[in-house]
Image (cartoon, rainbow, N blue to C red; front, top):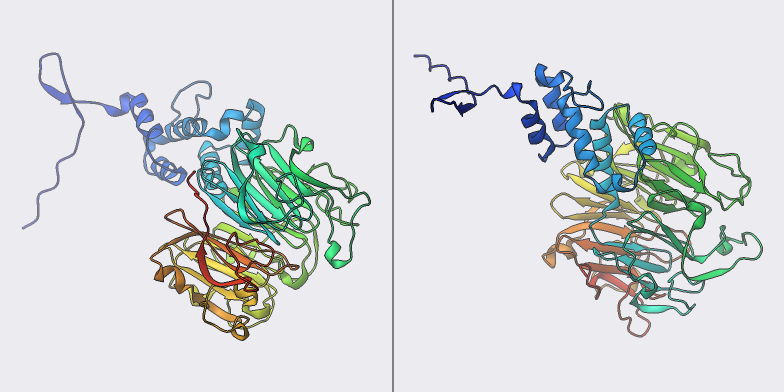
Length: 513
């Protein structure tokens, strides 16, 4: 016997006579708009609703743009509730919408992706080359480690082995930090950029002194050249800095002698210039800088994409060659892999990305097994790490021939060079002779499981001139450090000459303060 067909569901309202009658919801679109605008829907949810309902595809008739559908109007309302629009002029809004293909739903997706990257309400720890920076969830900044060029921002050139609060930033809420060789940059929630440390580019460690008259800036100084740019992220390569603006534009400066990448200004020009080429008309949501190259993740109607430019040594640009690129070029191989990148990382010699479905790709110079493919060969195209197929990754970090992957369940895996015990696989009883064993395939960092901790975010030294160290922030908002601490960069007490920490140790900073 066939089961009876379900009755059609209708909304009812009470009439004047006290009886209930059908309520024509579609005749009251403002109610639907309120429901959509106040919902937790993301851009994909709104797009699905519009696709499956003919009524929701019709023009809603709401001024000033009466041809927009209800989901588009809802997306516009949701966008304007976000903090990013508080400081955006109408012209900037229009430019962002244009680069997002003219769709408010795509603008909403861009903002959502950006919020995930900038971690505005989250704490952050950056493992720099010889010094470290920690940003608490309330926007306070702690620095420690080497301070020969004033890169700790404490007004001196005295190094510190314990975390010190930057009191000169009192009243300024910092949301993001970037570090390079002997320099630090901070970004406030008002979009201002502060810099301190060495004020020239180049690598004295490699025999390149940089421009004459180099000076050390020992306290945070506002970067006036970025006046008019609302910054949300900074990335420092060895010969350049990149700044990402709230509307998805990238500015770079000082690429080094004869580089002039992305714009035709002089190499020593310290004034930020808009990065030209293919990404001028697409919104960028994340940038990552390695040794003389830059990755930019974009949000487009076709999905998430990655562009790269700069030095192609070892295939780290991901285009199937080892040639340099003077302008941003799309990494097309992600399309054939059906790979939608949600997170990117740029180490000195190799790069990595995580997809929406949790897969991990690596490419570039594979020395010491840093690509996780079980060998040391170069990969000039992004290649899926097969041994991580059982893991749904959410975050990836790269350093000097090392890689860390954070899984959705809080587990963390590492592989590559074991230099300075920075992979976290050793315990304190291992002999020094075993500290430099390389890990060719992803291996679980069991120390966090043993402590009952789940990892949320990892940062490791991304430089070729210093012993490396690693930070891990747990889901319980605790900070752990391990690796080399010879400059005080771990923020831990170092006994005698035992300047390396083989396994994660808790750093005494209240990240929620």
